[in-house]
Length: 404
Length: 148
Image 1 (cartoon, rainbow over the protein chains, first blue to last red):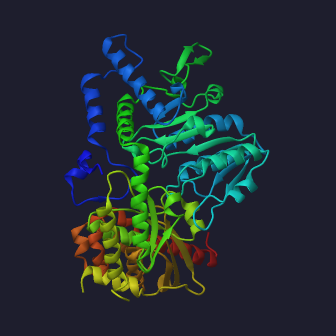
Image 2 (image 1 turned 45 degrees about the vertical axis):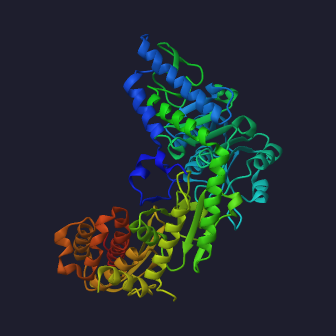
Image 3 (image 1 turned 90 degrees about the horizontal axis):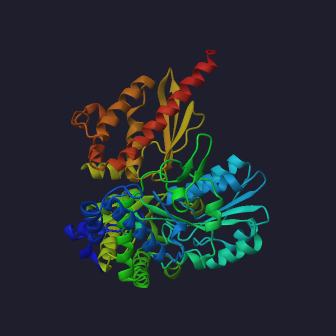
């Protein structure tokens, strides 16, 4: 619906980019905002007393406020800029996790997690002598809420859960999950991986009643190298710093050092202001389109692609029905390895992901070595779905034989 | 037969696929990016490959490379296999001399892989498993001979 706004896509009319769950393309508005910022307002924020440094500082603060408004955070100081979701989650594990998880405690994750929201907690549990527990997945790729209830308890100190599965697109019923955790595991903090949610759904952090929420800029039309961690103020203030250095200190004595206020305490070193400006421009772009519109558009494409693919003999589509799924179609084709399928599709300009999608625990549960994954965003349309379907038929004819 | 047809022929009807009874060495290699997994088992006579089987889940490139490999390495010892593997690495990296090397036989059909570097690990997976299997077999033979 907005293909012409994206220079890379506008330059390649034959390209069918169906890998936005891995990373999104960038609209000119984002690229222009970053270029203009570097050309007109760039200096090191928070440092200089001169007018240019003040301008850069203002842009950095404004970017934080823009992103905070977009995800329903009333207190922008509780929104930290990081390198991305992976760093955000590792930050929580290294600070809150080391401070709060003790021997005998329990750390809970789900079967649907990306490795970035699985391995840090597995490592933390091993490091602290805590028990690592996994809430299982149903056959159709949803979080098994009975299994979740069964692994929650008074010793649970942390529950890490994805808002949307990157491998299947399954949308977690977060309100239900939160109420179960609060009831059955009152001592637990809730950490949410929102990398696949914020680009595609309306997210209101303050209404979610979770403790930490992480996402990445590059999957939501923004630049690579910037992401976000949102936390509750009281918890962020109680946590030790993640990295130390410039910007994050208050007083550095010969013996000891005190920390700057939020958010600076967690943003050591020169801030990534150029990418923050780009992320704010991406948020403005998405806000202008409207997140409800984004959701409807993707849902229509997801339903269309699921129906068309499922009608091909030998195709199996994984995950829940399209109304419980974001813009992801994970599937397999009998007798054709997903890698081969991806190569055949690439010959016709159709870009999909093939493999384990950084979710080996989930694929083990599905019982498949790999899947093919097509994922949609606002610049995709029905012609992309058609190219995908034709490519799958072509691969089937080549590998299996026509009308076998 | 075109390169693609040759790869597909080996994909549909792979040679020496299965599990070897009483192997001297067996090893599995996985490609964590795409989830491929190949197991190679060998039986040696005087340090040379006498019997070889492979099994596992892989794409056409991985399976064809494994199938062709089992045809090529019979009668070779560990150092000859290492030398051949180096030629296969050169082939999938786009070395034109390797692509024209008759010693590589049908494997030359894989030379086009160099244009899609992401697929090169698929072509090399069986060879890496074979190297591990040979090392295990050679070590087992040394232990059996009472050597340190």
